[in-house]
Image 1 (cartoon, each protein chain N blue to C red):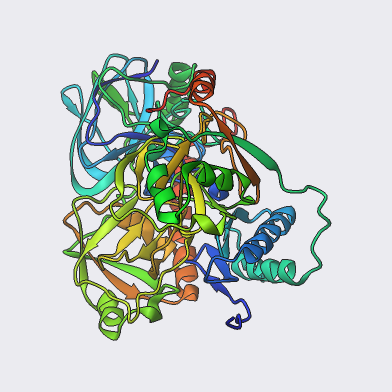
Image 2 (cartoon, each protein chain N blue to C red; image 1 turned 135 degrees about the horizontal axis):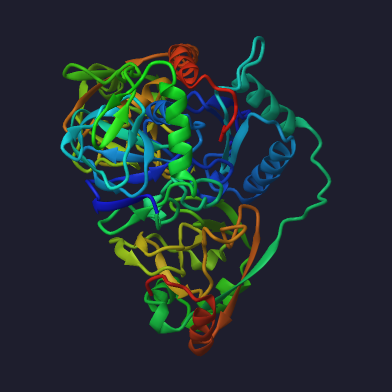
Length: 344
Length: 242
């Protein structure tokens, strides 16, 4: 046992990069809402990108670390303490056994990822450790963390954590405190949404032309407020009501991460990680994959403005995002001076 | 009869392509879609993430990171769909499965059966007989994991969805509407007419395959008594709500 849950937080979930190959059975890939932040969190503790982290949402959990553990908290700016000491974010931290990690509210952004050396070691279900709450499988019993839960790390967590941390501080020393040891460097802060309205690139969806002229214009012209009942399945968007010229029935057809569909009430829904694999509502837009992580950092009450782009522009945006991420991951890996000794 | 346009392959977001063969329910078209799904999957391309057949369309989800100079996974996906669509179909060396699903049609687990019978002008036994005799085939899965949409319902059993959906439909419920049957894997909201219930677990993440029914399966609903239903439910060891 590795982390004992004192408070679960708003919705803390074991997540990884999701499960593919099962959408024809109605099983969505799911996985981390902000896969970019998840990947950096894993890199910070020397993990492969696929390993499971804890996705903390808006109000974080309180956890007791039962063994020495190398952890990293990356993503939204959560208040976080290790006993009575502020927990440094965006960097690897070796936390001593018995320390209480208390995450408060996110002051900017909505989701952060708590990574641990070796990853969280819950059983893989259908090829992934990610929690899928709507059908209650994956992660820890298919649900969010609750008080009294124990979230397992790998069996040799303490040894693995110590050996990785020693590699980090061999040359440059560490910040020392009763509850923790940390490195002096840190990864660049996640590019969190700033300002009142997040600009999100989106392509016209395949039913865009069925909407009346006012609705077609409004979708890309107006700003949309993320409604309170938004979640990992979808973000409900408040704004002008959208209507089609002649609302013919649409056969249920496949959806995609980022599909914006419009039910009969005219209020669009942006489909997120835990979306349904198919849907029978018209698709007014498809959000560029490159902008999904930023959207995942918005909490209800925030605003988005959709900027129309082509599929080629969406591809270019994705390549540009990967090009920005690559040197970050490389410089973190260089800190580990990776010799492949305990790659996993 | 309307003429059908030549199917177009269009992007679905930036990580999938979609092909629509029909915008209305057509069993022959869906059978073609199932064949297309088999052919695409059989190509074994490493950039394929998911092949999702639906009632009148099919999506091919690809790994958008699988780019290389001169290679676009989107173009490759479209070309593969096009090739599979126009190629001679593979020999049916792995014919679709035929799955028997036991169903209890007793009033205790079939709250809408009497109502459906009245709407169809049939007696309850005739509704059950016709439901069991229909040539059912799974058109697609969706809504929740393992939830099949099944075509082939006897045209005499044509009923619309209920005016007011239920907030809780028990797991295992068999329901009809829109010329189709469905089976609810979990206790969820639902607006279809409940005419029976199966004791089988429709979806179990710990089972391989996790779904009782997969796209393209032929399905035979076999009537069982309430006593048998309860026996089989215990055997299934379901922890679901009933």
